[in-house]
Image (cartoon, rainbow, N blue to C red; front, side, top):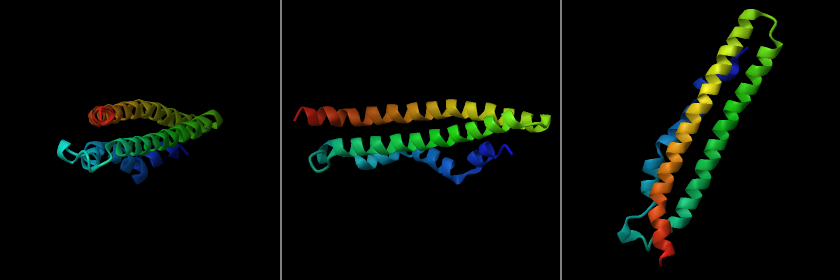
Length: 127
């Protein structure tokens, strides 16, 4: 009945998507040139494309969590069995905590993206 959270936590989908945030540093290092290759790579386009990809990833994860919250809320509201209601309440609490984790992960990734892309955006703007 309170499968939303269990499915979310066990799903390789959300774990893989958190893994994508873990790879931000590596991916940006491969997308962005060193100064000696700055004229051979379009860092601005790479940064903008990566920002869009990261934003879509964050939106997908947020939607997954929100859907599970809504399902568990409906289960809790419709539960006649006290044990089932408690399970749904526990899942809801855990899912709401997951929203906080999501916020921290997103902020970390955005901060790194901004720090990594900023020099190239300024470098290209000064050209």
